[in-house]
Structure formats: structure tokens, C-alpha cells
Amino acid sequence: MLVPSSTLILDRREIGRLVGAAPGPTLVAVAGVHGNEPAGIEAARRVFARLERGGVAVRGELVVFAGNVGSLKRGVRYESKDLNRQWSEGRVAALRSPGAGALDAEDREQLELLGAIEAAMGRARGAVHLVDLHTSSAAGVPFVLFGDTLAQRRFVGAFPIPVIIGLEEQIDGALSEYWTRRGCVTFTVEGGQHDDPASVDSLESVLWLALHQAGLLDGDAPREVHEGRRRLDARRGDLPRVLEVVSRRAITAEDSFQMEPGFRNIARAKGGQLLARDRRGEIVAPHDGVVILPLYQGLGSDGFFWGREVSEVRLRASRVLRSLGAHHLLALLPGVERDPARATRFVVDRQTTRLVPLEVFHMFGYRRVRERSGALTVERQLD
Image (cartoon, rainbow, N blue to C red; front, side, top):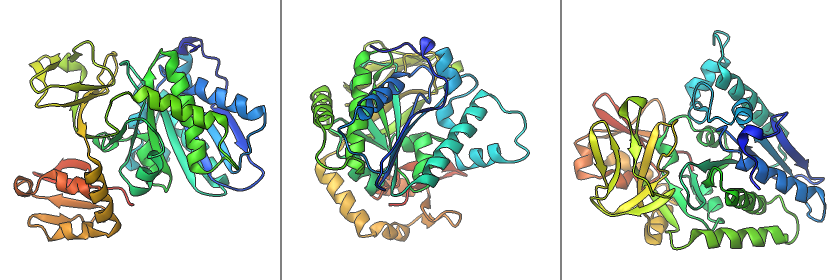
């Protein structure tokens, strides 16, 4: 049974912590970064309850933190601002500076969560992995999204649910990206609809598979790992195994955005199909593709994401090119220059994209595309 967030009993940020006798990897899980998403809290409590009964040997450390404690207690998404959009380098540095000024509710939550995760990393006796547990306003299947590094591709390949590449790069200030930059293998899981009890089951399964994939479970995989894999595989149905985000429909309160009813959190759409409406009129699908995370709640800056299926051939080609370090060849293209301020970023003349589509840069992991002074910047995470 899923406990409504408004009645959630939560007296501390640390949901649970288990340290194995032998050194090993660390798995940090964050649940409830949005206060209307309590399913991850319940999933983590189930996992700890099972581990406390014994019979499962653990090495390293598992620790789970509540993300936005105040909002979880109130059952609201956030108090002042979205806590999952505040994790840019500049934002964190400003928050920690002596002149930060008055702090709002999310500022205080972020500072506490930041300190808790850093403490876990400081205790680590091996590699550190981080999973951010979420649910969505739309019904649908669980899926994984992650920053496109080769290490993270390998890790999420263990999960038999849709894997979405490029969504993290569409937004700024995501918690998972911040910790990827600090050497963690990170990923985010959308477990299903906020108030669906099956979302707890899915997130619990994800935690068991993450424990196994990260190497925290000594010996043979326990029954929960096998059951979790079967459960997640059954929930995927006929959806594609790997998708990529092509674009994001950014919205503001002034847009009067309204999603058409009936879309699940991953839903196929035909070209020309009505997707949503805003103050400017109808929003239709540009061609056949996939709607991802349609917005059916009051708060949010993402109307939906637009995606498409990625073939295994393309994934394999991308992996080979990146393993060979062939991304250096991009600097030889006309109108493409390295950004002197950051080695993982190119500045691309807009004229170049007419000859060399952005999909070419995506093949090398350059998925974070932003506008800057009439040009584009394309950036990747370090492999």
C-alpha cells in the first residue's frame, strides 16, 4: 500500500544506512526530491526491512536519503522552487558562499542533502553510485534516464525497462548530473504514477537490481533480484528498449499549457497528432515519435519531451567511436571550435548545423545543446 505523502512519517533525512563488514562499493539513493513523490521512500524502507532480516550478504554501503523533507511532510511538490533544478555548479557555489543571503526552504534542503551525500562519498570504500528515485503525474511504465557516459550506459543496461538517453541534458540543474561530474555513476528512475502502488514495487525492484549491478551483494543474487528483473521486464511491454530525447517543450505559467488527456509517461504519437494546447494554439507532433513525461500537474516547467527509438546498430557505432576517442575529429569540421573555457564543449556556428546535423555530435556524447551569442554550444560528460 502506498502511504500518501501528506501522511508520511518522516523525522530525519536518512531513511536507512547499511554498512557491510567488507569494503566495497557505495550506493546512494535519493527519494522524494519532489515532495509529492513518496513512493521511493516506501520502496527503500522495504529493501532495508528485508536486509535487516538477514540472509543477504552486503559489502560496501547502502544509504538512502529523503530529498525534500519539508515538502514530503506537506505532500507538495516543492515550497519555493524545484529542488531538481538547483544543482548547477554556479548555483551550488553561490549557495555555499558567505554572502548567500536569506535562504528559502529549498536552499536549506539542498545544503543538508549536499552535506549528507558528500559525507557518504567521504566514507566510501570503493566506487560510488547514485540513483535518484522519482514518479510522474502520468500513468505508465518505469524507465531509466541518465547522462550519456559510457560507464553509465553499461550500468543502466542491467535494467529491463526503457532507457532514455539525452533527457538529463535537456534540463539544467538536475541532481544526478551534478554528482556525475563528481565521479559517481548516476541515473534517475521514473517508477510510474505518483499514487500507483505498483510504483513502489517498481522502485523497490530497481533498488535490488542496482545493489546487484553495483556489486554490493556478495555471493549469488538473492531471490529479490531475480523477481525484480522479472517484474520490470513484464512492465515494459512492447515499448522500445532505448529511446533518445530530441527536444523539450519548456513552459511557464503564462503559457496556459494543457496536455491532451490520455498520454502515458512514455507514449507513441503519430505525425500531426494533437499533443497539447497553450495560449498560442494547438501543439501537434512534428512526425511519428514518442511523448515522454507529459505534464498533468499544476507545477512544472517541462510540458513534455519528444523522443524517438534508437537502434542497437547506432548505439554500437557510438560506443566504438567514443572508445577510440574519435570525438577529437569534430574540431576539424568547419565552423566548429573548442571552447577554451571547458574541454568537454564545442562552439558550433549555426551554418554548420545545416551541413552537419546535431545527431552527429550526439553520436560522440555531445548532447547538451545550448544557444550562446548567435552560435550553439554542444557539451558532453567525461567518459
